[in-house]
Every structure is written in C-alpha cells, then in structure tokens.
Image (cartoon, rainbow over all chains, first blue to last red; front, side, top):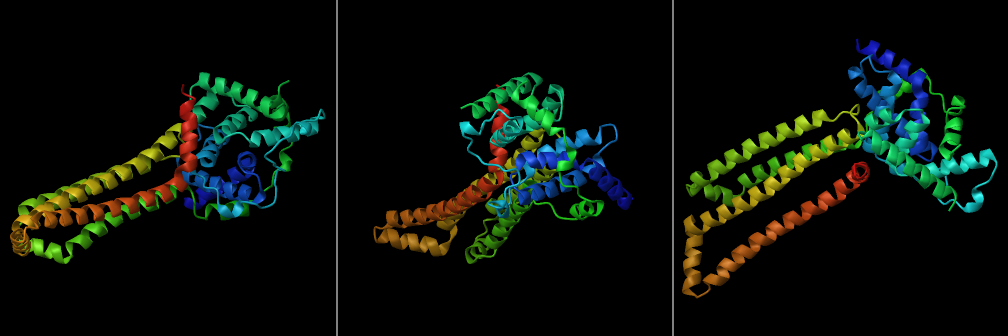
Length: 164
Length: 213
C-alpha cells in the first residue's frame, strides 16, 4: 500500500514539478537555495499526501502546500548564502536598468519581484499562475477584498521600484 | 498592459526553462528528513518538557530536599508535587493537540496561527514552571525557617548577636539571585533559539494581519 502511495505521489509530482520550481524561483535567488527549498516542499507535499483527496486538483493542492512551506516552514540554510546567482538577482535597481526592450523590461521586473516581501510574492505568484482573487484569498487566509487591495498596492510598488 | 501582465505572459511561456527532475530523483527526496521549523519547534519543545522534569527530579535528590523529608512537611509538598504533575500532563496534552493541528494544507494564516499556538502552550508551561519554582522556593524557605532545627538554631544565634536582619537579608538575596540567574539564562535561550527560528514566521504573520485592516 505504501509503495503504491509512493509511486502515485512521485509520478504526480514528476508531472507537476514545475509548480514547485516556480515557487522556488520566486523565493530563492541561487541554485543551492532553489534545490534546498524544492527538497523541503517535496517532503511537505509527501507528508500531506495521505490526506490528499482526489476532489481537489493536485496542482491546486500543491500551490497551497508549496507556498506554505516557502513562507512559513522553510528555514533558509546558511550554506545557501553567497553562492552562484540563479536568476541574475541583484537587489539594487538603477533607473537606467529600465530599458524599453521587452527582455530588459522583464529582467528588471523579475528583479523587482524578488525585492517584495514573502506575502507579496505569494500574491504575485498566484496572480501569475492565473488564480482568481477567491483562490488567492483562500490560499492565504485573507478576505477577497483585502487580496484585491493588496494586489493593487503591489502593482504600485512594482511601478515605483521600476520608475524611481 | 501593466507590468504584471507582461510578467505573466513570460511566466507561463516556456515551461522548459526549469530543471527537469526524474522519477528517481524525486523518489530519493521523499526519503530525506525535513528540516522545517515545525520539526525544530517539536524537538525543542519536547526538550523543554524533559528539562523541567529533569530539574524537578534533580531537586528531589539534593541534600536539602532529603532534609525536608525528615521535616514532616508533607502537608505542603505533597499537594505541590501532585499539582505539578497534573499540570504537566495537561500542558503535554495541549501541546500535542496543538501540534497535531498543524497542517500545511490549511491556509497560510491558520497554519501560522497553529504553529504560534503550539509555541504559546510551551511558553505558558515554562512560565508556569517559573511561578511554581518561586512558590516552591518560598514554601521551602518558610519551612526551613520555621521547622529546621539547624536553621532555627542559627537564627537564635543570630538574634543573640543582634544580626537577625542580616541573616534574613542574606537568605532572601541568595534566593532572588538564583531565581534571577535562572530567568536570565532562560530569556537568553528564548531570545536566541526562537528568535532565529520564528523570525520569518512572525514577520509574515504580521504582514498577513496587517492586511486585515
């Protein structure tokens, strides 16, 4: 039974692993930290899996456990500091970085998102994953109205970071 | 198009840019041990319970405690010991109940609250122990001063020399210093261990709470 459970879990996670990679991409800024967080999210998903019921979509369930691990359970390990850059993250953005070309703009945007706090990143993540405000509010435990208000504030904040 | 929509377009564009872990790599991961803060909180909390049980056992074996046994002070100490164990059992139950409620499938706010609640139970247990320690200490001092022939003899000698005030003062100062030292060490422990462990959680919890207004 346990083997069966393991098998079905690993197969599902293998298929949906990009969700976890995306969470790691937002919350870490180098390769080691990315792997570290991926590992912890996998363990937490596995621990929660016996209680997973088929009535929710596996991916939706993953968003919740993945984000919760990233913003609540995960301890940044010391060895992940000062290693190679994964996403080219630099924390100070100068005005001249903001170029008209889309690629440059995107690079700057990713850097700006990395400067947001953990909760703001969670909102951005769910927004990027095309979740509606109901999903966002249910995942984070805030009201829909507050999720909307916060999202607008984040947009303004990002604009300020990009156009200081 | 606003900035986030531009990002969204790119975010969902190319799924091949992420590492592709194989079945075996993921399988190996589920066999590893978690290093989450919940696990650490669980271990440290259990150690705290063990620490206090150990302290009470240790105190029982000291010379002065053995002297207490001869003093026929059971009327005071038996209830204290019984109450101590009942409250330990109660806190232990509350701790496990709260711990089992921690679930990563809850929403973030509830999850954070449940973790903090588990911590709060242990914190209350520690506060209870400190209060208990103070009460036991004063009960002990009272018994020593009123029943222990050795001490009574010393008091009589001190009052004969006109130093009874000094005698009591030393007694109380030593007791207070020992308590202060214990509380100091514990506060330092909390500050370091839980400060490091819960910093991120507390920050994020505050941020979520802020959204409620």
